[in-house]
Length: 411
Image (cartoon, rainbow, N blue to C red; front, side):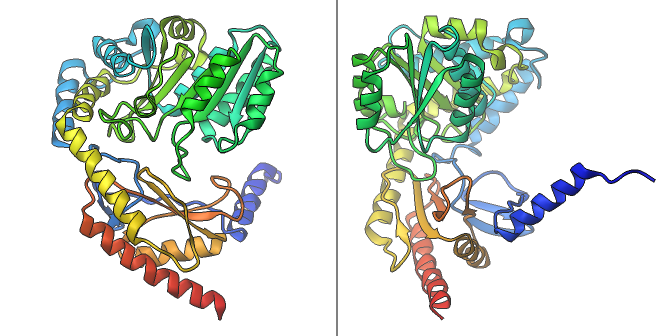
């Protein structure tokens, strides 16, 4: 008979603890392509929860492009980029991505990654290694995405970089810290659009600080690329900034509708990352068919269809802000497709998500640690494929559900 399996017992107990706190997450299996309607458990639900902001994930041109890419390049890359996995498709994509940001970053070069998480980890750890041990400072916004947080933690552990957190809505403490910082390398790290609140970072002010205090500014524009700016080039286009101090990270699995991410920066920084970024060096390259597909996605983002889709998003955002009012729930103001509704407790958020599911909607409850304790919420997201009628039906249902939940709480 085997001895007591302590690790297994610990796992079971920790999961039970999550259940008690209403913090356990569960997978749901979709049986249909990503769109505004999803088949889940043999039911059709109206989905207001994906990051497919432009509605491109099931676009017929992208479906055709990935089939074409597979016919041209097969289904795997076979090796890391520095061995034999770097295809002409990857090269063409990186050149196109660099061109996207060329008005905002001088002498730009782009580097393609399989995920945004990997791109952020690579950028932060790689750049921190430009300086010697203990010679770098990293300033990270308090509400940054987990991939940025983990990149900062790993960089600090590897290089002994000093880490300082700052409030992106009040930059006085950041400016004061930068003014007293004598480290030769200073890196400011921030989300372009904060994924849980939908607010936009003050990029113009941050660039001015980076220029004044000799710092780099790393912007993770995961939720802005494809959405912000007239041509969908992201937060740099919308903010109309231009600087050699910008390290731009864009995600290609959200508004672009496919998969992957990229870093765009002045060429010397990208060359350094190719040489020293361990996640890039030791990861198998993304299938070339994906890169081939993304070339078509970038065309759609820039052309008239992309403009029309962003206009539809703007219309939905306007209607939401004008017509959605709550009696007790907190509605966070956002000019992006991310529209949070704060319910406070885990129980209330789960109850609202359950009632929405029963009404035929898929909007999961977002709870700690993704958001701060006491700010559990519904994270409602719009797609250009949503109609005005879709949105107005959701608004009607939400008002009914709020009254039901608040009535039960008062009783």
